[in-house]
Image 1 (cartoon, rainbow, N blue to C red):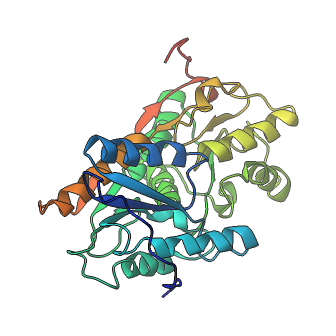
Image 2 (cartoon, one colour; image 1 turned 60 degrees about the vertical axis):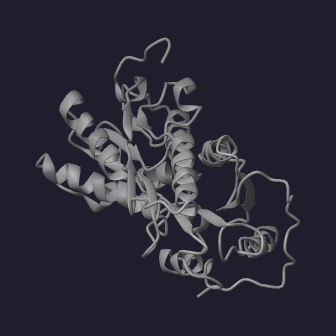
Length: 317
């Protein structure tokens, strides 16, 4: 189990604050999906008379000096400072496996009982703790099925996300199941190795140079596990003269702010991270109020179909 120093002094809390203070434990609040999720937690908490301490401490086990030092922030997520924790658990992975992340989250309440110091997890389940997640599996499966059913594509490659990221693996599993459900063969040479979220160029290079595959002839589409992977892959393909979607359809996941204004606009799966943050904060505050809460809350992930897969893009979406 990963233990952090318990020597960090308690934070000073305003005795006049009207409600409980809760902590958001996450890797960052300034990039990608984090920009929506942390604001959702804060908006829900403030609207309910509670306050939030954001602890963007980086990925657990990070080797880069600054990010590793940021991990020390997590020691502040204790009963000395807050009444409970929302843990965006998948954001903490990358340098360590899901088991080590789960052990860390379980350890947040090691100085108290889960009832006295509740923790709500986001995206990755931890035994005995309430989970809020979006249905990544169903969303990705629907996107792959759309490529097959609406566009007649049968040779579809996949750019994997980080191997230690639970939702990334769910998206990969959905891709495989969608192919099987449509009677299409799974080909290992169509799938990249697990990659960091910003390694879309490497995904394209792996397929083109490492595997010797030719867009249009060997594979007709690339499904990426995230929009960021899709953006960089699309840039690499277009830089080599391949047209999207005429030669190759490309899709992503997350419906990031940039997806609708990419060239071409990116077909993707929309996930409302702001709502996910609000729901997680709501469940934590209800637990603190002594209410019964669901063990799992699954939010929808919906298709956003645009030009990059061959669908027309609306002027305003």
